[in-house]
Each structure stands twice: as C-alpha cells, then as structure tokens.
Length: 245
Length: 245
Image (tube, rainbow over all chains, first blue to last red; front, side, top):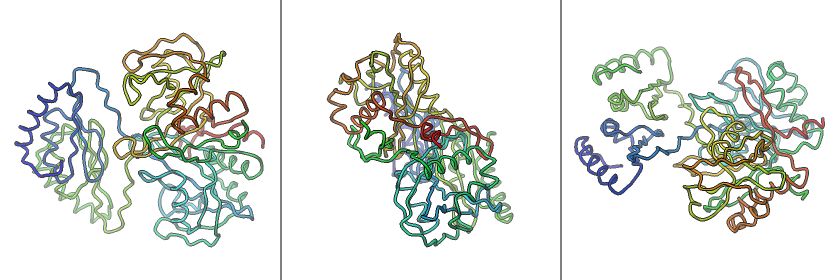
C-alpha cells in the first residue's frame, strides 16, 4: 500500500477483504506498508497480522488465514561477506588496517574485507571492495574457502568467502574513511602475525592461501548459468576437477 | 522495550533521551519493539527512526543521530538452501517429488532440498532435511558446488549449496505434507529428465555429480574452527589439496 488512509477505514476494509479471501480459499495475506503509512501498522497487528520483514522504507506483515499448517517461509537469515587474497609477483599480499571494528588500533594487518550488497554477485563484490578500499584493480580467480558462523549480527548468521583475486595494478590509493593504512606485505610476515597464529580460523585461511601459492590447491570458480525460472546465476565449482571427466 | 507505555509519554521520554545521547556523542539509537508494543512504532517513526529489520515478534528501528556519515550495516540479505546428492551402492540417487512449488504435478524428480534454519550449519541442515523428507539417515561428505541467485524471495538473494551425503540406511519413509513421492532412481535416469537437460543450472549440477561418481572431483569439506571472537564456526575448503602441502 502506498496511499495514505485513515486507520479506521483501513480496519473496516481489511476485515471485509479477509472474509472474502477466506471464502476464496486464500491461505496467506501480505501487507507491505511504506514507512509513510506507519499509522496502519497498529491496526494491521490488531487484525492478526505479524511482522515478516522490514527494510528501511517499508514493513512487510503477513497473516496466515487458513486452517492448514502455516508454511510462510522465513526471512533472509544470512549476511554474506568477502575477504580478498591478492598477491603480487614478489609474493607480497595486499593488506589493510581498519579504522573501525575489533582490530582498531591494534596494528593488525588483514586482507581487505567487505559485505556483499543485496543483489550483488560474490565475485563482483570482491572486486568492488578491493577497488574501494585500496584503489587496486583486480580480476576474480577463485573462492579458496568459506566460513559459516552464527549470531554474528543480531540473530543472523554470516557466510564469509575467502576469494583469490589477481592484481591488475599495484599502486595503492587507500580510502580514508574506513581504512587507516594499506600496503603490500611479504606473505610470511602477514602469516606470522600473532593474531593470525593465535586464532585457528585465521591461521587455517593463511594455510589455505600458502597452499594455493605453493601447490595445486584448487577452489571454486564461478560459471554463469541460467536457472529453470530464467534467472542468471553463478554456479561455483571445482572447474579443474570437472574438466577431468 | 518490553513494557507497555502510552505513546505520548514514550515520545516525551524519547526526545529527552535523544538530546542527552547527542550531547554524549552517541551516533546511533536502536529501538527494539516487541509486537505487543506496536502502538510505539508510529511515534518512533515520527521522531525520525526508520525500520531496520523485523522478525515475527519484534520490529527493530534505528536513528542515526550524529552528523557523521551513516554507517549502519544492512539487514541480512541472503537465504541459504541445500540440495542433497545421495547415491546408494547401485548408483541410484535419492529423489523426491514435491507437493508444492514450481514443479508441482509435473512429474519432475529432484534432489531433496530445503532451507537452512537461522543459526544452523549447512552440513547439519542437509542431514536434517534429508531425514525429514525421506527418513534416510546420512553423513555429510562434501559441498560439491554452490549457486548464488538474486531476487529469489522479495528483494533477497539465495545461496544454494549442493551437498553430497553418504546414506546410512536405505528404507525410505517419506514425509507426507511436503513430499508427494520419494524413491531411489538410477542416476542416468535422473540426469536424462528433460527439465534437467533443458536448464543449464540443473544439467551443470548433474554433470558435477557424475564427475564426482566417476573421477577424483573434490569439493569443499567442513572443518570446525574457532574465530577470533571465540565463536565456533565451520570452514569449508578443499581438504585433499590442502593436505598436499
């Protein structure tokens, strides 16, 4: 709904409609209320609606009006992040220090990281974040590993993809608001940092990256595909092993 | 907030608090309103709050009260699903027909699929869904591939993990509400279905599964780890290639 409405008129109209929809055998009623229609939130809840999800400018409510089992799917449950592993020809890795977050002021050098935007491909997000934070242009190589963790943000979970990218230029132009410092650092120096050594989530990732540098480690690479419903999509898989067939 | 409050008293108190918080240099104010306090949603919005996210029983609002750049992180953006590839010793694959969804009534045989619950590990969700839908107990082997697609559910994105599981029993006890039929089917028969052949997202996955059956294809396997903040987490990686080091 987008047009303003008095809450009493809204309640009256909603009750009549729900009676009709029940008779028609409809199972669920959704109401999407723009934030300008905030006056209609309370009357919706009074009529049996519950919250489903919200974005900054709207609230979605739902009401299961059937006697059958409620099958309303849950809201999005995960945030998706990327970390970028980028090495130059001197075996130096691109690292940053952040202005905010838990490592602020601790002198810890980390891979550039960021959040995948709504509607954005992981392989595009990684390139974008590296460019934004460090000015380095890259091409996507592979996902080397990924991590799932829980309760990282309110009640939500987190999927964090460690992406290898190939640098196309080497002259760092760091972004000032988020990034305190950025540099190319010898890989061994990065991996030897106490915080990397101490936490097995970090040391394992460093181990994977080192394996990638020194042996034939293969991760998942993106292949564009079309789904049955006609959407474009990326399928990530072990393309070296796939070609063995 | 959990206790009932008159909206006028709430507005008065909120205004005074925000003035104080601004003086203290606070940057953002969050209000979590249980659905029973729906009467306070409108006054919050009138005082400059916007929606951040909602769950069935509460609404979270936020107000950036500082003059600095708004750095409030976005809401969760992805739903996470699994598809289970399970083969018995006769090279038959476990497949189902669903009661609902876009393939309803079309006679299409699919891998068992499902949504990863909030706070649930992918490798646990796959085992749970297969058990729920078919009664088959399994152990988790690997993630063979995964797919990211967009606008799959309202504005949200979807991450779908193709998981290989090893069956521990073979006697199917199907669930009746979601599943119309379940059976063990020769893999070649599954892969030859017109809908699998026609859609490259499905035919590519079938190709990956066949490669796994016939060659040395390696996906990502889960390794339990602890993050820097002490959370337990699963890191998924190519463990065969990692052990080469």
